[in-house]
Image (cartoon, rainbow, N blue to C red):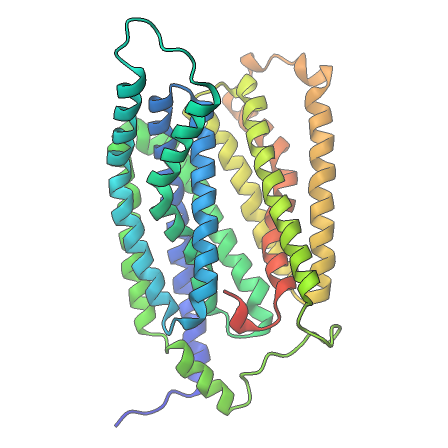
Length: 395
């Protein structure tokens, strides 16, 4: 004879699952950036330039994340066991990531077929060639990156049970995943790729994804299915979302939601304009090597991770989160403006960066990138909290 699980024990199970999922998402972040560094290196050898490779990986990576998140957010309410679905997605990421180097070699073969083996150097293909290989890169990377993008909304629906948890838990997971990304960037550039090579390093990410899948499945087995838990909460009168005490309406209007989404769209575009600009500017100081790019990327992601954690703490009441969102967006713009003015000044240009130590160059990256990226990182959990007061809509 089975006993129905009480709402209290269901809540405790979800809270315990939250910490297990946190470990999963941290390791998943490590794997994701190990892949990104490997794929960027592969594409650099194909295109013969690191700049086009960086753009291709960023476009394919972020585009895949966006599509995966959009698809998952529309269907996440149908999932009875989101954490189990997350574990399955981690397996799909691992399996598809094994194929990526092979598919990229196919792209390299196409490049050689159309542009190689000629008596004279081929003419510059210009924008058409760049777009063609950008498109091929996006196709090759689509499946693993789309699955990566689907993981956060699915996990959010699995571990957010109360209104007070919406911004805090989503922000916490976002921040942990980004801290894992920092670790993955540094490990790939300084340890794995130099010692193991590209092909073997990609399997480090595969092993991490499979480990996360096993751990996620184990956590899912100990968590009640979402509908069962919601039914128990409804019986106790806990299934109805409560509006903020300073916002009696609770649910934002359609115009307000559209405005916030447009702000986040523009914020994301500007953030990656910053990343490309900083990588070009700092290349004159750090050089164009993989290690130099990894140093810049780690500093950029580190600021976003810290900002995500800060935003999670600030994402309390809905209206107050809206004010904080406006504040950090303005702060990111003003700080970046001041930093670009400083970098453009003669005082910065006259310094002999070529004679600087590695430690001082790392400090330069941190000092230049951290302030603005902290503000950028805080925007996501704040926007999530602004957009919903219903925990069932967190995903």
